[in-house]
Figure 1 (cartoon, rainbow, N blue to C red):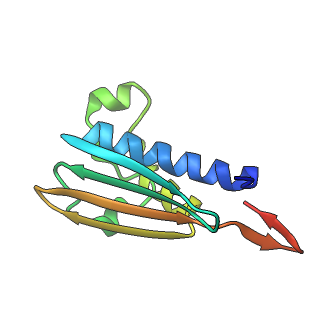
Figure 2 (figure 1 turned 90 degrees about the horizontal axis):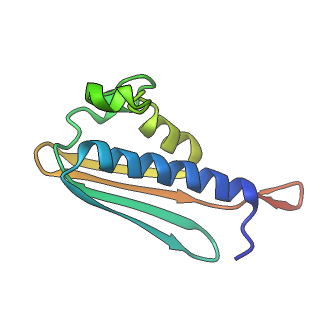
Length: 117
């Protein structure tokens, strides 16, 4: 579709972080990517424990990952902050005991007459 490499990099990082959150925390989940000419949308929905405090979960270094996940090198508390940093628009809804919905949108950026990531 001709998206710039920097945009593809941002989408890839966010999708990976969302996928890892589903794998680490959820009982089941889906990751969807809508690729449109004007934007890319990543949607992650899961059935799981939910996020009791989204504001706290958005802080770098905060993690509820179990020890076995940390021993594998994951669960450093950078998932949601990385998604926020990479996306142009982020929406998170979560209900404790039910699950989480995350939607991240990514737009090509126009700088100095060029379309950038």
